[in-house]
Length: 247
Image 1 (cartoon, helix red, strand yellow):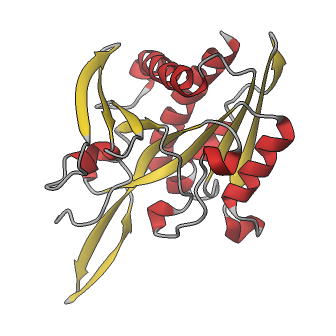
Image 2: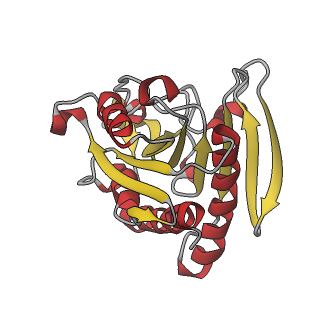
């Protein structure tokens, strides 16, 4: 597969022949998992947590790694622990390869506890709601007085080996629909009215399919992607519940 398209994964773009000027990346181990920390060269930071084989045997350890890395981002963007948090699940929950945001929301403990209020909303896609996703998330964030928005979405990669093998955390904001080249307004501190971090997993690969003498560009996913999405949603859900409620 020729890597000409840009990936939603910062770790793949950093490894491109011509990474953005000023981009940098370092590697470390967190709880037995390889983690890549970097910047895109324009001030945005990212953290990629890699897992070789998602499954029950590594769920607890992987969740702990996500907790540590997500906590670092929340502290960096907020300064002090946020007291009102909005978890925004993006994408179409009815499509397994686009269901990470919805699956994560279903695993979030919502409500007020210990002086911290957490709410979760499945923002869906404009084709289903008729509302631009960034406008939707921004309106809810302002209505609840959010001090932090955590947006979760499925991503597109350019390397098949990355499919459902990495969870990315970034403060770069997120453009709903970017994985299917349907660019909408960006969910960012400007549109949300508060700091934003995003969580994503690659559930599809951008590629070129040659068949019957013809060729087509598109997004391709793997059989059984739903089980991997459930693993990442469970790990991230546990991590966020612990991060905000101390459980």
